[in-house]
Length: 449
Image (cartoon, rainbow, N blue to C red; front, side):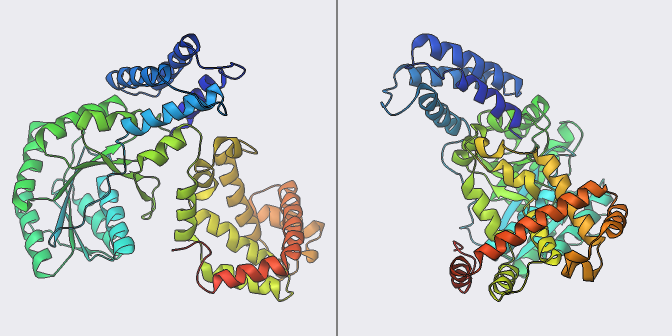
C-alpha cells in the first residue's frame, strides 16, 4: 500500500547523504520533499501541515548522536511523528466484556464489510477461541446475506438466518437474543452500505446500534478510496460513536493517504488492516510497525508471525527428516515449499515486510509471485516419476512439461537449474544444522510461542 510513499520518502532522505549535520536549510529542503510525498499519497492537507510542523520542530531541536548520519537522524524523527499520526501505541481490540460482545460494522457499499465480518470472526475464533455468531441486516441486497452465510461456514462461525420480511433493527435484536441464548462470546452485525452517505443509511445504522447496544462500532473503509473515504469517515463519526476503524484492501495499489488521515479525521484508532482476499488476511494494526514499513524499515515481526501462522510444521519436520535420513530432495518437496510461500500471501507479502534495501534486490514482487505460480504449474505438468527422479527429464520431456504449463522450455531449464542448486544446499545442510532443526521441531516450529 505504501510503495509510492516509501519510495518518495526514501529519495528525500537520501538527499541528506554527504551532509555533515542537520541544519535549518537541509531540514527545510528535505521536509519540503516529504510534504510533496505526503500530498501525492493523498494524505489530507490538515494532517500534512500538522505532521510537517511537528517534524520540523523536533528536527530543529534534535540533539543528534555522533554515531548517526543526518539521514538516520531524520528517519528517527519521521518515524516518531508517523507513529503519532497513526495513533501512537497499538489500540488493541477490547474483549473484556460480559458476553456476548457485540461488534457493529458500518461503512459504504464496496468497502468490504461482509468479507471483513468473516475475517474478524476467523481471527476471534483462531486467535482467541471465541464462539462467534454472524448476522447481516442488509435486506436490500439478498446476495450480501447469502455471501455472509457462506463465509461464516468457511471460517467455522455460526450464522443467524434472516427471518422473511423482518426489518434490519428487528433482525439485529433477534440475533442478539440468539447470541445470549446460545452462549456465544461474540455477535458481529454486518450493516447495509450505500454508494454514498445518506440520511437513511445513517438513521438505520444508528437504530441498529441502539437496539443491540454495540460494544465495538467499527467503520470499515477502503484504503483505495482516497478523499471520498475521509468524507464518509467524518459522516459516520458524527452519527455513530465509533470505537475504531478497519482499513481494507491495504494490499492493493493504494497511495496510503487514508491510513495516515483517518485517525485524525475520526479521532478513533485503526484496529485492523485487511491485507488480502483470504479469510486469514486480517492483521491487528500496530502504528509502530506500519511506520517502519512506510520508512522502508520493514516489519520482520509481522513476517515471523506470518511464518508461524502459515508454515506447516509437520511438513517441515517431514522434509527435514527425509534429508537427514539421506533421501534426496525432489520436486514434490519443492512444490510443497512453494505452496507454503503462497499461503503466506506470496512473495509480494513477504517482500513487503522486509527492509527496502533487502526487498529491493532481485525481481519485482508481482513478477516473483508470477514465477512461483509458473513453477508450481511446471511441477504439476511432470509425471510422478519425473518428480521423484528429475534426471529422467530429457529434451522431449522438457518440451512436454513446458506445453503443459503454458511456459517456455527456457523456463523449465531455469527451474531445473534452481532445483539442482536447492538439492546441493540440502545436501550441505545434512548433519549438524539439520539435527538442530529437528531438535527445535520437537517442541513446535522454532521461535513459535
